[in-house]
Image (tube, rainbow, N blue to C red):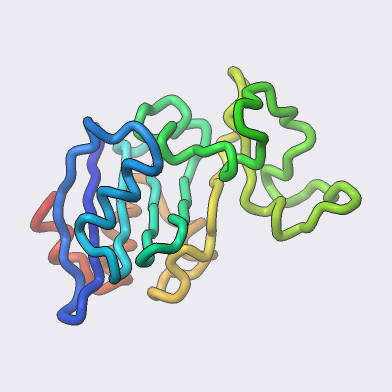
Amino acid sequence: MYFAALLARTEDGWEASDTELDDVETLSDLTDLAREVSDEDTVLVLIEQEDAWFGVVRVDGEEDPRIYVSDAAAAARSSYGEILLTDELLGREPGDDDADLDSLDLDGTEDPEPGDSEDDDEDQGSVSGDAVSHSPVGDRDILADLGVSERELLALDEGDALGTIAEALGAAEVLETVR
């Protein structure tokens, strides 16, 4: 079971709307959907698959979307998750479906290759063949300025992550109205 909602930050607070993702095939489609709600304010697209994974896409005006996915492996098995797991997010070249898992810093413990920046490696994971990491991928500071730190984001339980995020944002009631 999937749930998807849009949270738009306005002058009057957060506004929520549920959304159908049936016609969304790419991250660009999802970004356009968020910008239809508000092309100037911050819009969060919240997606979850019950007890498996959750994702947050943040669209601030015309800036590129920022993405966080709690479990790359679980999301890779989902049509909605595949929308979020872009080549860039996973640190691979477009069309490179055979990314070498050993070369990616999935949990932050590997040493970076010469010339690589540690910051570039922190947010990478892989969706390659059957060997997919269960690590979170994406921008771990996506909600830091809104009250959810990296540590808090990483500690969220997939079962109620979106509710916890909405509560930290002060948007729990509006999210519940569309749930």
